[in-house]
Image (cartoon, rainbow, N blue to C red; front, top):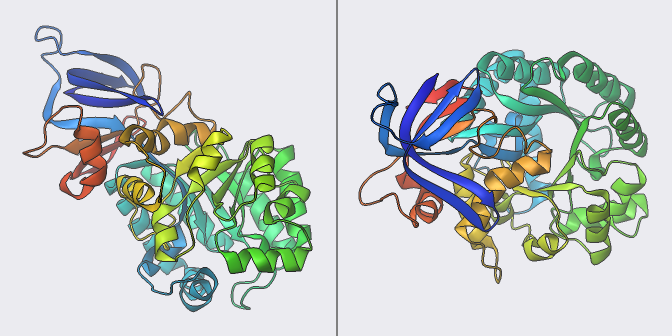
Length: 406
């Protein structure tokens, strides 16, 4: 068993965390086996790390691997940004060498940020998605990855034939889903504007038959919302997804900013999970996430980097942006931490496996180096969020395997 003598911060609920000073955390075969106060006799063989704090590995519910090299591409509105910067950037992943290099760089940065679980889109090319999945398998990542699907209202150099997009996605699912206990395939129709009714309906039907995950974008931008209503003739954007069967407990929708009460009711009734992308919403001037209203309806919410509209893969940074983006709602450090860890795990339905430091759970850990004047006290969690740049990630562990060490 590997044992570390250190300090721990563990989420219990949206309002409560546990702070353990001078504890020993032990893991073996990828599973946490031991959490107890340090004992000089029993724990002589533990690795000394009292200058650190260990938290659960962080969860990123929505990000775009193939956009990683397009971060900081300025254009303060979603649809022009996609056409000017992102679609051309994704097109480069048609080159397998470029896709391979981008995947390697992305995962290196992801692990260096302390993220141990991520939900990922790739470019709309089967080979690019295969490369991302193979890279994740090789590196020991815990991920859901899906090829972006887009068969309508898209540039010629990206648009797919409906049948090909479906066949490629079904094949990727059958070959990669559960190939490793940490790897899963997620069906990824980009958003309603770039998907035909047939694509969305067949994707939903297949996913529900196979108990598979689905991800997409919802109501990120007011122009986007208006165009969706015009094209599909529905009262709301959310009803488009509802009518095609895309909603449910294994669906994760990014953004969900411009929602009516009816839409919130639909999301709550279908138990659909939401990925809040705060830095992205700042960068593209998309609007303010209705955090309070969605919490009141008990929706499952996790935070997300949304690279490349989000410029940082640091989830602690995203927590800070989430706090700053709310004009009237006060989000406590405990609440923010919840949506990075156990709350995000609940959004995936993985709360029994990851998201907290608990005996029997996966040893997915983020070790953070402490520096003076910061001390192990009740203010440490707040400092980790609001002063995250002062706390370097020193080690990231997934299923007991070190995937990053500074």
